[in-house]
Amino acid sequence: MNHTFSRFLLAAALLGPAGALSAQAAELVELRQPNAAKVVVKLQFRNGSAADPAGKEGLTFLTSQLVTEGGTKDMTSAQLKDFLYPMATRYYAFTDKEVTTFTFEFHRDFIDKFYPVLRGLMLTPSFTQQDFDRLKSNQLNYVEQVIRASSDEDYSKFALEDQLFRGTRFQHMTRGTAAGVKSLTLADVKKHYAAAFGQDNLTIGLAGNYPASFAKQLEADLKKLPKSSVKPAVPTVAMPKGIRVEIISKPDALGSAVYTGFPIRTTRANDDFAALMVANSWLGEHRKSYGKLYDKIRTTRSMNYGDYSYVEWYEGGGQNMLPVPGVPRHANYASLWLRPVQIAEGLRKQYPTELGDLKVGHAPFALRLAVREMDNVVKNGLSKEDFELTRTFLRSYVKLYGTTPAKQLGFLLDSKFYGRKDWLKEVDGQLAKLTVDDVNRAIRKHWQVQNMFVTIVTDDSEAQPLADVLKNNTPSPMSYANVVKAGLPADVVAEDKAVADYKLNVTDVKIVDTKDTFK
Image (cartoon, rainbow, N blue to C red; front, side, top):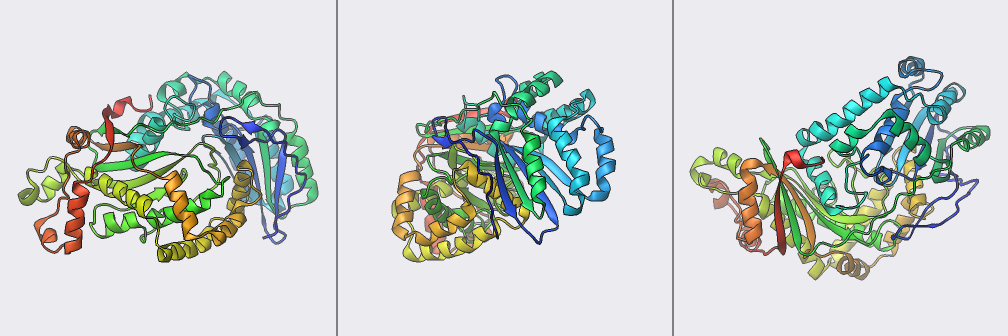
């Protein structure tokens, strides 16, 4: 991979309490690929949903979607689709907490034909009332209906962030709140685009095989964007006192989706992050069956589909097998994700004879087991053998992150966000230098289990019994069918007893009606 970084125009300044670097002038990042047939343009703006004005939550997302899903002053959105279809182009916008990224992918043979469209979308978007109404309706439907109905796993993750970032501009989903989206007008979008999408909070990314004149033209045209007047602050997230649980009561939920986490003061900008990657991979690498959580909860006890841990936000965990770029954040947290486990109502129906009197399902046992596993690694650290095996895996695995030019370019832009040159290259060197002592020091420094936020999305029949168990810290034995229980190894039986009695430092339990979330 030949990385050429030209016209490096970064002027650094401290951003918020995290002390992160923020670009004060447009910067061009280039990834030259002489043999590539495709050209990729990424335009990353330092705004994100944190830039949404109070009461207008969801405005940055809607604005970005209206740019890419609308038309230009020369073509309507319908005309653009007809015009671009023969070129097989692809473009879209993605908004996270701190950045919004526009991505354009097209064949190099169509540079001259496609570029006026790219320029028109960014400099002279049509912003029609018809497009606005259509996209606002879709967004409001997601916030009010889809997120509650389509995936309890994603629901629990967004709800945890609502709890963890409460009181900050990171609290709301990137798509906003119901009240925020309802309040949005086309005038809001036009004003916000001029204020939040400026040449001075923009990083331009270019990948592929393209003439130097194209890069110069792109830079020159994007300098026509106004300077931004929106400077979103990065929140400092307070550690909770004890374990604070919010149980979302939802009719007809088939299981209990559990997500728990706590703030950590390290990101990819810090060298400790590589050490935490090793610990995290050993505990529960995303969608990997060798992790400790997966082994104990799914493989040994067949409780659910998967159980994983994270040391940063993982976008689209249900769809993506590998981390994706475009979601860099300065405010970070560690988390455990337990995909839905069975509720008492389902277990009673499945095993009416053995479990007919069951009051609560598997959620408290699964939560205790996961927290106990993290507690064990904090207290005991990794063994030399586990460290070596996990590090070897990771050094190979991270090389798969950039499997396409678009992903490679995306990670380069994220590297700039964190003040690094090329994190995907640098992290291999960081991993190579690590010792088991480095990893265990990082674990003790950044991980703990006494203070956590927990969100559980569950059926309304399960909410109160689950709350009672957690609030009172009463034992929660694992529930098995008799035929399974009879065949359990002695070590599993002993561990089940220890997990059932494991004390969580719960200081608050609250039940929230699903209708009251993301309002």
